[in-house]
Amino acid sequence: MKELLLMKKIQNNLSGAWSASPTPLTKKFKIDRTSVRRMVMHHIRLGQKGIFIGGTCGEGPFLPKDDLGLLVQTVVKSNNSKMAVAVQVTDNSYAKVLENIKAIESLGADIAVIAEPWFINCIGQQDDMLKYYMESIEKSKLPVCIYCRGAKQVPVKFYKRILTHPNVCMFKDSSANEQIMQIALSAAKKRNDLTIMTGVELGMVPALKTGYTGILAGGGIVIGHLTNQMIETAKQRDWAKLEKLQKHCDKINYTVYGGKKITSWLTGLKYTLVKMGIFSTTTGYLNYPLSETTKKKIDVMIEKEKDTLFP
Image 1 (tube, rainbow, N blue to C red):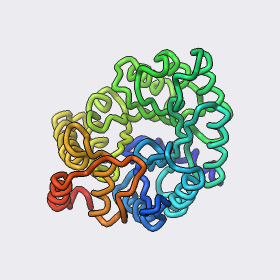
Image 2: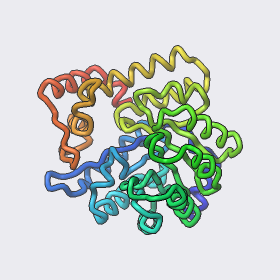
Image 3: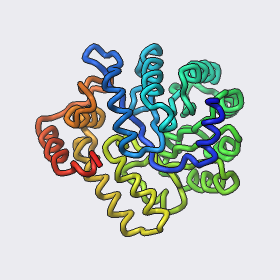
Image 4: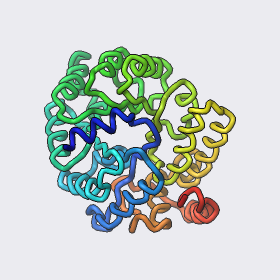
């Protein structure tokens, strides 16, 4: 039954606005299940097509496996099939990736997200890198989203092979690389079941103008209402309005992240969510500093942007 529901989602297209969500933690660094439930309901309220958990913004590489499992389980139960649930399974070998996929499948996740191995410099040959991807994709019992964090770590030519595999349903492109963008667009033209998404939330317009049909934003939990509008505006090819929406997103994001140098990133995001009544703490493994000045700016922004944050 679950497989049929997921296939229906894919057939109906996974395009749209997604959120790469942060993870709410208690002060003792445990999964805050109450806040997870509020987080999921807020994403549903924002009309997000899917939620990506355990990613970079979700501190997945830092979470103990049991905690990640509890996070997945709580999200799936709270979500009740309203959004697609994608979980990062990236590791250092395809054997560990497949082990991670098996675990999240048993907990009800819909899509496995695979990025470059954490210790990428330890892979000696290019063939080993390609094998990491192809073995993971081929043997995965879940549809796969490929997450490209940059253009320097994986030979660009590999994406031509990776994105043609029928078990790859999504591509999150955070590379801002023209060559990778063209490969993704070409693959999407050949495969109507492949959704290509930009992960560059501070520069979404170029990808949307060239034909990307999705946004997977780390700040989606605060700018999701705007990214929904950006998807629809791109369909209408209203580029002036699209640029205006990007500027609106940037204004919110830079306030949350502590300015253009992104000095407060994840702590600022969690602080914003605490003030919005979604998270209970700013606790995180990535302990970015958060100044009183930035807090005051966030407080002012939340008051001014109520209609955007709580549509």
